Length: 268
Length: 296
Image (cartoon, rainbow over all chains, first blue to last red; front, side):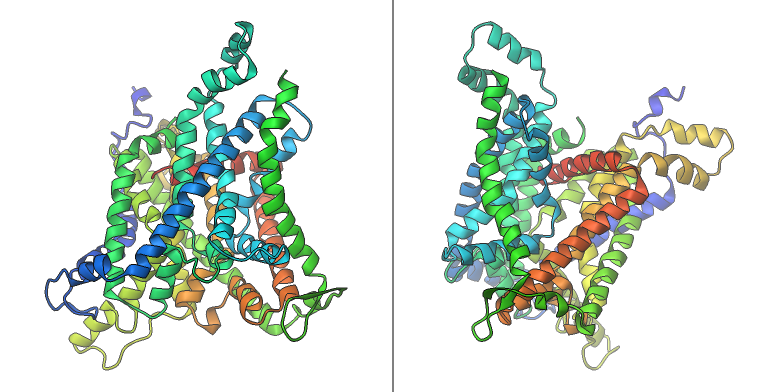
C-alpha cells in the first residue's frame, strides 16, 4: 500500500515546508521583479513616474562601451569554453579509461581549483602573469577562464562516462578498431551529452565570472561583468535596470531551452 | 594498449593545470616568505617572515573574525531556509518546474542580483522612497553598507548553492520511511530529526561546504555594499595586492585564507563523517554543483 508513495509527491507535505518554500521563492524573485518593473519607469529615480521605454533605447543605442564589453565576454566565453571542453574531455577519457601511475592523484588534484575561494585564484594568476611579464589583456582573461572551466568540464564528462559500458570498447578493440577509431566512433559519440553540457557550463561560468576576471584584466579589456561593476559602483542607474531585464530574459530562455540538461543532471 | 594512451590523453589537462594553477599557487606561497619592495611595491627576493608577523595585528584579527562571523551566520541561515524548501520541492508534483524556478535567479548575473538589492535598499532606493512618501521618515535610512547587508546579500546570492544539493539528496530519500516512523508512534518532528536528517547528511554536508567556501572567500559583496566595518579577508587581499602593492602581505593573507578554508572544510567533514565518506560526498557535491550550472 505504501509502495507507490515513494517520491510520488501525492502525500501532502506540511504547512511549514510549504510556507518556507513560498518565502524562499518570494525572496529570490522579489528583487528581480522590482528591477523588471522599474526598467519601464520614466524617471531616473527609484520612484514610479510613468511608463517609458527610454532606458531600453539608451541601452541598445547609446551604450557602445557596454556592448563592446559584451563582445569581449562572448569572445572569451566561446574560446575558453572550447579549449576547456577539449582539454577536459580528453582528460576525463584518459582518467576514466586508463590505469596508469598518478591516475588517482591527478583525479583528485584536478578538482581542487573548484574548492578554493575564487579570489585566491585571481590573486595567484595576477602575480603569476606579472612574474612571467605577460601583459594583462583579453588573452590573460582567456587563460584564467579556461583554467577554472576545465575542472567543471572534466567532472561532467566523467559523470557521463560512469554510465558507459566498458565492454563496448572491448568489443570495438576485438573487432579490430584502432585507438583513434574507438575514440571517434565509440567513446566520443557516447560522451557527447556530457561534452555538450560541459561546454554550456563553461560558457555560463565564463560569462558570469567577475572576481577572477577583475584581477586578470588589463586596461581596455573589460568584460560585461566588469562593465556592470563599474556602473553599479556609482549607484542606481536605470540603464542597468533595462540591462538586467534583458539578462534575466536571456537566462529564462536558456534555462527553459536546456530543461532536459537539468533533468539529466539531477535525476539520472 | 590501455597503459600506453592514458597519459597521452591526460597530458594537456596536467600541463594546463600545472602551469596555470599549481605554479601560480606555489608562487603565492613563495612570495609570502619574501620581502616587500619598499617604494614601488612588489617583492625583493630575500627571505623574510615579515608578511606573517604583520598578520599578528588587531585590525587583521578583527577582519578575520568578521569574515568567520559573516560566513557562519549566512551558512546557518541558508541551510535553515534550504532544508524545508528542498523538502517541499522534492515531494511536490511540480518538482521540475520548481527546480527551474530556483535555478533561474541563480543563473542571473551575480552583479545584477547585488544591484537589485541596491535598487531596493539604497539611500535613494524603493524602500526609502516608500517610507518617505508615507511620511515615516524625513531623511533616508542607510540600509546598505553594513555587515547585515553583507549577510543578506551573501544569503541571497548563494542560497541556491544550498537548495540544489539538498534537493538532489532529499529527492532520493524514501519518504515511506517517514510514514513507517509515524506508524510506529514517532511524532512528526522526531520522524524528521531521526529518520530524514541522518539520511540526507551527505546533502547537508555538501550544502554547508558550497555555501561556506564562497561566503568565506567573499570579495565582491563587501566591496560593493559593505563599509570599512564589514570588510572581509578577501577585501584586504585585494587592497594589499592592487592598492598598497604589498605583495608578500597579500600572499601571506591568501595562504592563510586558503588554509583556514581547507581546515574548516576538513574539520567539518571530520565531525560529520569519516574522511572517505566525506571525500565521496565532496565528489557528489561537485557533481551537484556542476548540475546547477548545467541549467543553461
